[in-house]
Length: 126
Image (cartoon, rainbow, N blue to C red):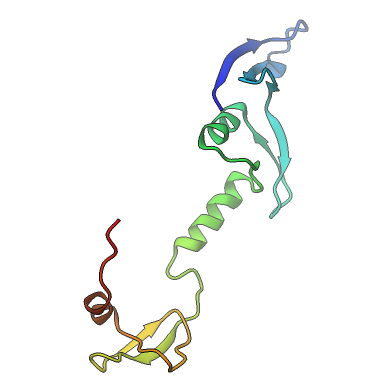
């Protein structure tokens, strides 16, 4: 959804802190900075016109639910290690070496170590 017009404004009172930018979308709707509450910490954060434009360009339909600090904290916690995922010890069905996998082996299918898995399972061509 492309934005067509950016209008900078300062109110007649001369209050520079109240000045800002109004954006009109392709539908003619006025878009302004929005104050949202973070669903994790409850603090108010600003969903800026620039961020709204980015969300629209990417096709995102929902507004952000978390402030920048909580988003970064959540992203960092997911990217560290396996994200707290429980790992299970098992023996590779191909070479017999002990390995860990992120699922509980049921015993009805072979489980491989990383080296054997890459040798046994063909690489998907994309």
